[in-house]
Length: 193
Image 1 (cartoon, one colour):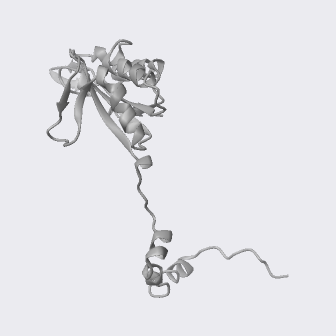
Image 2 (cartoon, one colour; image 1 turned 120 degrees about the horizontal axis):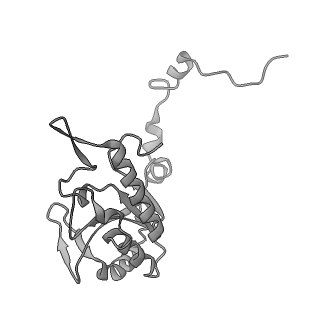
Image 3 (cartoon, rainbow, N blue to C red; image 1 turned 135 degrees about the horizontal axis):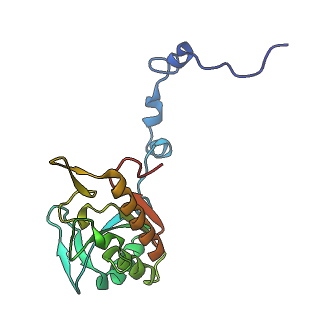
């Protein structure tokens, strides 16, 4: 009895499923057909809007390198996220800009820090936006690196393992504040996995 199982794909059969044996132009002949077979469709529901949050009151400071984006203070967030939700954008990602920076990025792990405060404000706004936070603290350090800097025999170096502990604390702080998702962008070995 002959097998009805499909043949496995071999290099020879895969090659026969390409040009010139298969011609896809027929799928591009009619506008409606092109719409049906296109691979990428973008709508507001596909986007995550970045929000840059700073300490202070009633401040909206334009970001010159990102036209249309500003650094906002927490008191402006409720109206901002309501407008974002009304546009059909389902999520925001928060980037904190602390008032004070130090060598270990203390504000990043503070339950009263700028990101934790912003998460709580968005959650209290009445929108159902997904709130994502950036787990990295280069913006929170006075040296701008993603990690703790140590002097190793006269050479400055990032202490990967000490940094992982602080990043874990930062992640817990954001989760405790109500973040729905964490974006692990700190460039440390072992941050994920």
